[in-house]
Length: 262
Image 1 (tube, rainbow, N blue to C red):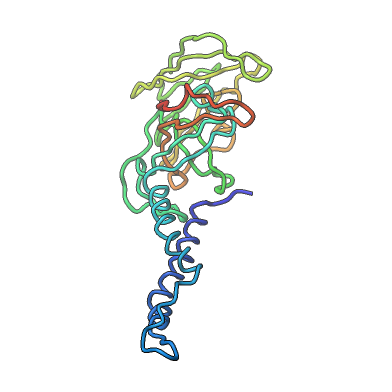
Image 2 (cartoon, rainbow, N blue to C red):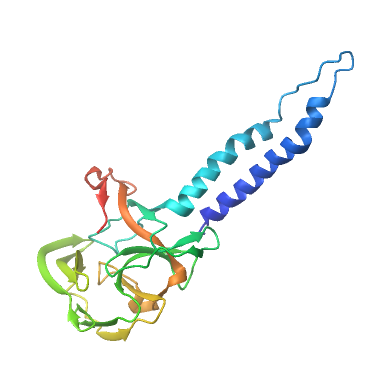
């Protein structure tokens, strides 16, 4: 089951804030105006535990909600589809304001701040199931013509040049590691390809307000080649930083902590 943490945080804020407000405006004055039966002193009774807890919880969760909803949100990489750029177990931060300021929970854009560029690593809501977050690299922006022949990209007629960088072991197989240069503007990054899988050639046009994305692990990624384009309204943010790398059952990969995602 996929949990919408923004929705959970919003509910906690609503409930704790309501308890605090009701007590502050209605119950606390009544409680403080009660008098002992044998004294004129006010009965300054302690707040109920649920009120104390709500007063503590509300500002903490509100700050988390604002930071997570408008500044940066953490994600964990669950698969190898973005190898070698991102490894299984990487914990990353995603900027929430690069592609427009959006309201949490409903994901509605309220302020335009920019659009994805070719080569950006983006997190988005999976078009076939928006409750799931995916991460891929933007290959085509609106209006681009994308060609893929013999595992080489062509963008608007320009070839994305590749330079071999040796083998890369993954699972039971060895992949070829290549440095790929996306054109206009030039973006250099590493990809993996497997000689054991046949190439699926294609040519297509990216429609307006949509993006064509691919995993850097080209032969081990379910991406726009399978399920189509990413609509602008599905964008979550731009991945920019690895703050921890820890695959369950293994030691943390300390050398990856602090890596900038390119």
